[in-house]
Image 1 (cartoon, rainbow, N blue to C red):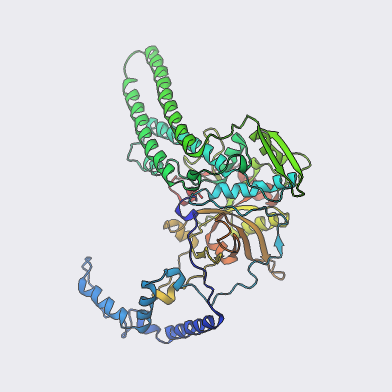
Image 2: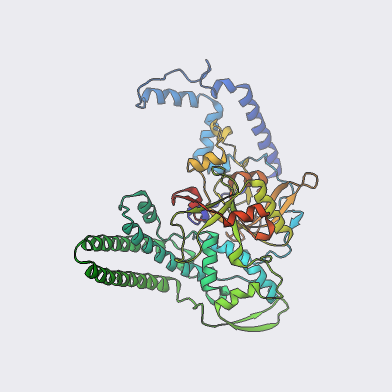
Length: 531
């Protein structure tokens, strides 16, 4: 999560004139009927009327074969129509399922009474996980201070996350070198692929809040480079890769020298080398902080007081003097109408749905984290029914729910709809995309790419099953319905992987998993993706 798919991609919403819409629907229905009638003619290649049998055991691609394929393709009027449409239009707008209707899409019979406002905008950055986190955490603070509109500073957490990730990365470079991992080993190459990307996970956010606290957005607003993070990320990535190679080389040379001399002299020399290595790394970290400070601005210090002046919802003036750590503690202070249930931030944990692995099992990811000495990234793997029930209980209690998903699949940022029937690839290309959730994970077709917040759900009164979900995004009010999306339950089944829950809303069998031994997944596993 937090990479290219985390940032908004504009796809035009389909809102044609009603008369045109009716005509388009009829044309689509006619084409579908034609598909059924002529199925054997241009779908099943084994048909006598289909593509000529030109198969060969020669593995090379034959020009004569591709010429025949093209001739057969363009002999169909439907394909020529598709060619004309696709040459000059976004494919997703062409194949959008205009027959799809979601009645009362922004009407829900379960909705949290206080969602928090305004709708936030991560701009051209991969900070979705920090926006989802702060959108959840601002709710109890807005209730306590009676605020109409309020944002927590995403840039504040972003600054400290970048600095912590740089330290984490350099420590991994040192440790993998000590463990004898070669530079071209898969784990080292995976670490080098993205030393400090924008994305993150809930446990990483909890680490930051625990160590650095929170501040109002007005006291540390987004700089240009927070809103447009690619240039800063590129500079940091290049620098840290270079620094990582230097540190690994020092470790290697030190190991060679340690093999000679008496035991006492070796120990003294080893201690000196450790200090020298720490000194080199400290200088590198100082340089990283210099880059961050100049591009994001000097952040408030977690243990130093800030002064915040504000008007409450009744236009009454207030002045507050607190440290960021004290301000974060206000979320769980006595008497506050909590936005996080009865749990502290550190107690909230992730449920994931990974059908490749056994359910009711604790999962973690090798060498994935941000704060050295902080909590690791862990998930309790459960079936979708358990995940949905926990999310519904949270929403019934008036609590927002952080969740991670693969937002790039079958979603439209213009209309704000996420539905697996949104695009009709079969109609345009005569193909069927039918991988299961497990297969998509195994084939690296899908992973968590974006974090958002659940604020409502429509539950069928007869079956008690969820039908659709209300989603608060962080792409600004221009996306979706004034910043809100609707997610069908079938889309949730296929493309939602994570929800963060209060332990009070899951059964004992799930909570007991937290105390068990975790299965360690490799860093390159899809569950290691950062939202």
